[in-house]
Image (cartoon, rainbow, N blue to C red; front, side, top):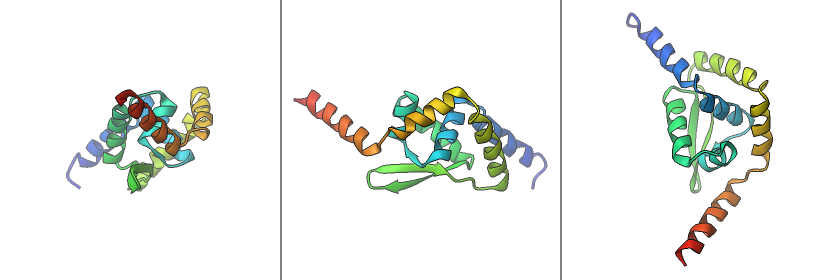
Length: 128
């Protein structure tokens, strides 16, 4: 590799996983694959915010998205061994956090079909 290129890539990857929200997303995805609407519901953040975080994690090789019906389902998908090594450390440590444990419990009650149905009903009701 070109001189400094490895350090530059490592720096970008570390920045991608240094954000508290992205760490929580990685921890949640370690439990099960999720769509943006599920992560938004669990984290109480907007879908565009979650999408922006997922894009950065995907760009740096930590997650991968796969289309399923109307959703893109994200899962951990480290492209390189260094990404897997970093993920192992981050997720293991995140699981020791009380807030992350609470979010994991909340994820168990979240269902993408129900979220989509509720969103559709809310929009249909407001249009009437």
